[in-house]
Length: 337
Image (tube, rainbow, N blue to C red; front, side):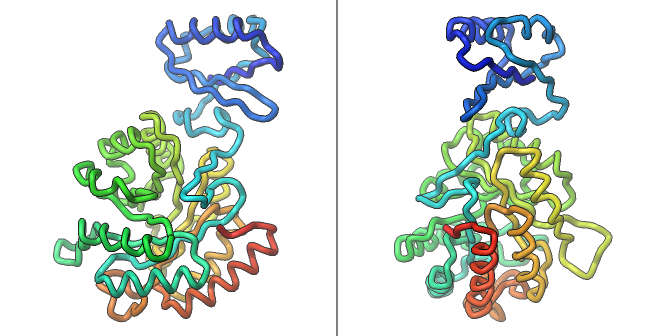
């Protein structure tokens, strides 16, 4: 339920409304925008009489929310949530480019790639220290050593770090990481999501391989319910009957998520298609669709990559892509960074 407050409403009346609602066991989520002030009521609001609340002197209008996700719902929070990561903002209209290798393999590999993506115009560095793989025999990542190498790359380049977590037990290793990524396979790892909800750190939450948009928003709700509202949603393609691409990129999900939620939205054209020649057209399409960020895989020598080499751009190809991304951003009146 959303309660729209009247402009200039008496503070004592508003406080009395808050007290009555909390006394009945509801949690409140308040949002004050430039033109409106709202109180979001979270809980079983079916027991509340809408006309009784509307009769209060401080209340302009009461609206019931049908969707099961409340805190991340744009109805509850009409204005965009803006997340600041070392001066790089998500959700304010600017465009962030998160680039780097699928996995951290060696010091030379991550440092060379980090320097290259920084030179091309990337604003953040991605790289997997922990790698969830379909096969138990595939490269699983350097884990703690990979985290150290990412932080070393940040120290030299200044690029904030985005890297994936797989288990709650690994949280101590992520204390200095700028953005913690939850991969597609862990989107519904609810124990992990609850733990991330207790942090004061941005979370990049990827849509699961076969999950609906509503299920993605409900996973974000788990994090938000714990108190952490710095969540970046990420569309990375879903599994369909199509076999010519690695996944099916749902470009419409980007625009729809921005309509349904106030959270910023990222998109990953590398995992979504798995085909090098499609990364550029999909990247440009996602920018037009309104993506706040792109996450693109880049490797200094993709032919020697230990994971997903076939979908990782060379530094030269990434630099060329960035030239066109800059042109598209300029055409749309958006700034990169």
